[in-house]
Length: 413
Image (tube, rainbow, N blue to C red; front, top):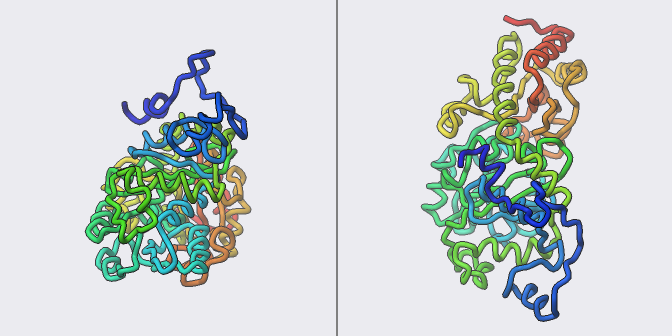
């Protein structure tokens, strides 16, 4: 099946009893079983079934299965938020004394999370993920994972996943990729060598900004060295499912970072239109980027523009679609605020991936807790405005930005 057909049909469990075309919402905290023996088998992992929504729910399972099919993985685990997914994905294999090598151009919330890890003795080494030789030089006996975003938010740097995964595997280290901005419509990181993929499904997967959620997809291909990852030793018997078996029977279950069935249901509704939405987001973003690039005094960043330092890498991953985020630098924080406040169509908020166009000043919001150095490395500047381009008619968006820029005094060249 091709992408949009997969969205509608792969991983779907058709409800036969009443003929419903959508998975029911099993809004139940716990599930009755025929006998104490049956319940014992479920708790011990000797049989399938559901006992408590924190550890499994039929609606959530279907959402996980559908994401697994889209990302081309072996199994997925849904979480309460994107950051919960990143936390669980990493802490499932990390312990005190371990190190993460991470791309520096990350979402501000992820940078904050990695700083929290320091209290547990887990160090992060920041790098330009596309400078392969520098990354190689940072690998030590304590390195346990390499982490990057497919498309950085808001830096919009695009990771050469093939090169980075080759380096990681050469050193027996897994590569975890945050695919939130690209989504599996644009890039399927597992096909390029990634071992674990995380998505903040609150964004494009959901599409309508009505649910917070995240999901971890395990490729099931990485060969875990038990000496290097001793916490996986009890799960080695599960072979390619060792990582997820440990996750679902340990950290994820015990920290309670489960996804609510109602939110899983809302995600599945959004998921069915992901392909046509991402096509529209990408086309609108490219046209808006070209339009804004015609203004004097404005610096436009978008992977689909040939002026982007990451255009060639992006085109190597997908030469047709480049995502729905554009950033502009307008000379000063004052100008950035004026632009945001002058727009009529765009919403002023910190989310991305909504059907509606959203604008934000990252330096004072999503990167507010980052240091000046962290902001610079993440491509966050005082005069930067991030635009999450929606699916409105592009003529209306261009007119809205044209009027807003005119109020500040910017003119087209």
